[in-house]
Image 1 (cartoon, rainbow, N blue to C red):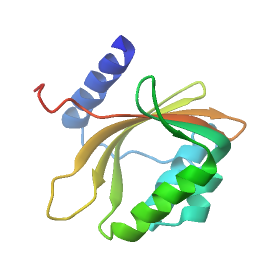
Image 2 (image 1 turned 90 degrees about the vertical axis):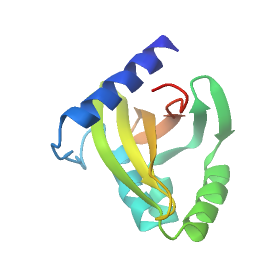
Image 3 (image 1 turned 135 degrees about the vertical axis):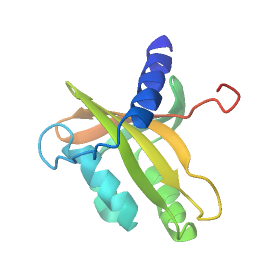
Image 4 (image 1 turned 30 degrees about the vertical axis):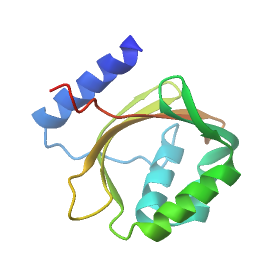
Length: 142
């Protein structure tokens, strides 16, 4: 848990210190993370799912499994893509280390509401994301 808090702090600090554009690589270990981000923003469920392993595990926070598998992912994201016309994810920062890609994201769900800050930790094997953990800042801690 401490490592996730540290990563969150590093991301939040780096996001406000730089305006450098994040370069998305479409090759190498981070290719599936890039593919799913682009497909997410295009609301393209079939391309989105190509980035994930069939038995992908999705965690809402470290250690808490939200759901597992492409069928459940298809159901959830198909609905999200259909119900959220303003949906867009902006990549603020990316760290790649070994088979892990960590993205600091700003997600827009509704143009009338503020963007949501999130950290996504993607674990990649054989060109597919087999595990992703979403970490959200605690709104009570400033």
